[in-house]
Structure formats: C-alpha cells, structure tokens
Image (tube, rainbow, N blue to C red; front, side, top):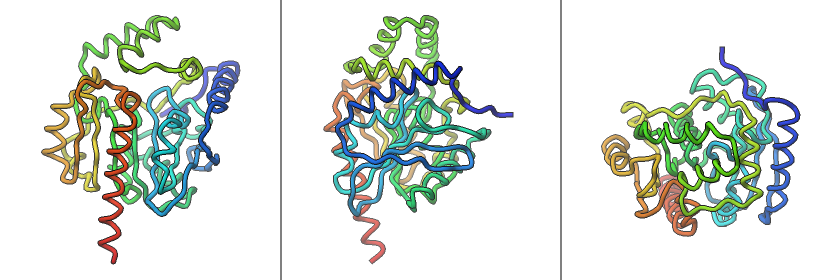
Length: 296
C-alpha cells in the first residue's frame, strides 16, 4: 500500500517551516495565499497577477516549493493569474493525508486543486521533477491542460545516465553543507543559491516523499499529448540529453516546440531567466490568441 509523505518528526517539520518563513519574508512580489482542500490533503497555493490570459500553474522541482518562482512570477503574471503550488507529498506548506498510490492519482489531485481554484484549464509549467508531474497531469487529466511547458524534464523524455545517478548518490552519502553545495554547483553550474534558499532546500531533506521518481514516458503516452507543448533544455545539462529529447519529441508529439539554449545547464531558467521567460510568454500568448480565434 502506498504511504503518505511526511516530515521525519515534529522538530524537523518546525525547522523546515521556520526556513520556509525566512524565505517567504524575502519575497517582494504581491501575492495571496490559499489552502485548497482535496481528498489527498490540503494544498498550499500562491496566487499572483491578474488579467484575461489563461492562467499558468507552476510545479516546482525536487526540494523546492512555490516560493522558488519568486524571481520570475511577476513577469509571468503581467497579463494573467499565476498559481505557484506547494506540490502535495513534498516538503512545503501542503499537508498530505491520503496516499497517492498510482500516477493517475496525481492527476486526480491536480484536478481537485483546479476545481478549488475555480479554474477550468491552465498552462501547466513544471521544472525538473515538476516537469514529470506536469506530464502526468497532461497524460491523465488533459481536460485541465491548455498547454504543457517542460523545463529541463530530467528522466521524462530520455533516460538519465547511470553515471549521473551514481554521482548524485555519491554526493548524497555525505550530508555536509559543503558537499551539498558541491552537488548543486555540478547540477546547476552558474547558479548561486542565496543562503536563505539553500537553508530551506537543505531543511526539505527532512521530508520523506512517497511520490516516486520520474520515468521515461512511453511512446504511446507522448503521442497522447495533443495540447501544445514547449520543452526547454540547457544545451550542456548533465541530467538531460537535449539532442535525443528533441528527436523523440519531434517524432511523437504533434504540437510540440523545443528550445535548446547552448552553453546552459540544468539551471537554465535561473541562468538566463529573461530569455527563458520571454520564450514562455510568447508561447502561451500565441496559444491564447489561437484559442480565442477558434471560438469566434
């Protein structure tokens, strides 16, 4: 039977929430917060922006939370509402109370969150592990997805190299701050986390997630993605093979666009946020314009 994600103990939970509060205090972006009740637990959501554009829902990476997007969410929300979720079953302010036993359950959770937000469909954007979650939603609850945006979808389109997995495992054998900083420097070269963000990410390691890990989507699953899709890769990413991913997406996803940024790594969004956000906004705005023209 699938288990429920939780912090190791109350002391670890309290330490994480204190680190979360420190990170939240640094936010300068106007936002409202909501706690959406679902059959899988309570989901914490940050709501930013306004406008008539189709909303964007953001799904964070492993060890992250909805606060991660603070540096881009204001630009993303200039003409639409943007929702940044603390994914259920991960460290954050969301509280899981029922197991997510199969992949379709994750989409069911997302469907309930959308209903609680009173949103019919949204552009779904996921980063790294969040890209896996976005893919699950699109495969199992396509009626909720206006378009899909995958940023550095490691292990979703192509397999992660065993050498990369072994290196991550070796880093993980030591819990020192110095070792973790070395790992993040290798995974996301050119990206420097603030001390506050690093402290929150480290504290997140005290959470025992039960969501499982990304797997490579089958050909049939990729073919089933009929909504517009944008996949973004760093050309020098250590966790993705952008060339192979480009070939596979082009062959199997009918309405896909691929953007590969040469010289960038897994932290491409952090490295060149203005360029990446501009590309994303162009993509969603074009989608909205096409959708509007077909309903006239």
